Image (cartoon, rainbow, N blue to C red; front, side, top):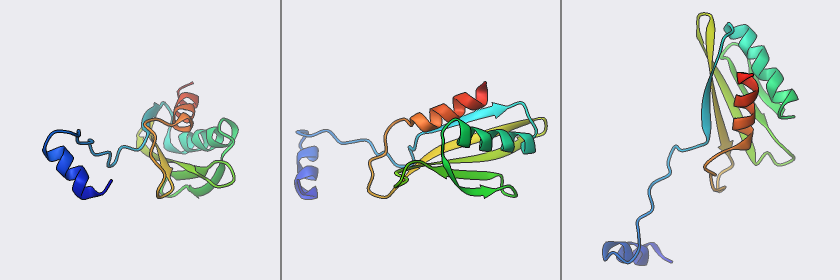
Length: 118
């Protein structure tokens, strides 16, 4: 259906407008009771052991890890760490290739967050 007809049907009330889904990638935040260096090692270990991921970005200075899954890397997961003294907040976010519909949740994000909370 072309955008003209879609807009026409929405304007006369025969079709509902879809809410925008911009910036709604699956994500979670986890607080880890470790310093940033120890937390970084724990996140890196969880990527490899728990998820079996291929780590593509391992930036210890910026405290960012990015990993992909499978042969085509349809889903990539990015973890960035933020220090708060004796605790560290880990921001976990799923990223998808252009043109791929973004699902409302990610099993990889949930599995990594669950592994870090143990």
